Length: 288
Image 1 (tube, helix red, strand yellow):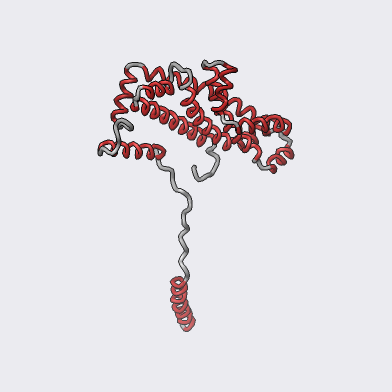
Image 2 (cartoon, helix red, strand yellow):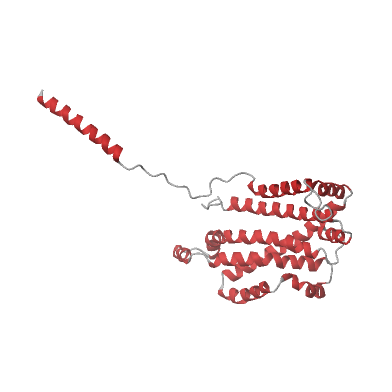
């Protein structure tokens, strides 16, 4: 009987002590989240939509001169008129063909030169210096020389766009190749990988992030170069349409061309981003 009483007393005395220890113990601090959070859908179009809303509000309030900056609905009406009479579809198709041809040539040249320079010291000695020299020269400053070499037709336009595209692709891909950890190369040598297996398993995955950065810059550069080139001895294209509208003071037509350029640029950049996320889905980054 005394043993049971002693045990009950001990249990009773230890219980308050445990409760007091639990109450007195410091609370576990909640971990702060430092990441940007979950990606929201269609956020890339939020900025342009806000800009459009501000433009419409300022036009409706009479804060903008219609002769200098027409209202969005005026630009929309002009765009519909240009589309229905066949002018805008023809110019868009011509611009897409020029930009696509120059981009394809620049993409192939940028990848080939980056691989040749990034995978070989001899290739780097022969290629990198020339590309850096070309990068230092303003590409649009080459237009008079290319007109003398290639004539004033479509060839020189495509060549200039190709140069604008290949430089950022080369620079970013070459930097990614040079930044591959040397320990991966040593591991490949220890494993006895062939040259092809080394490029497929280590070089390409390591260079893809930099390549996609250069690809986005190249896509944007192709549209920027096209705006200037289509105002030089062109008979069609969005740049030609804008140049003709400048001569007649048609601000609404100029804005239609700028809006189309902006839409194509945004769509192409979003497409490259989508491909990048799919191809590099194995990476754990803030953007993913």
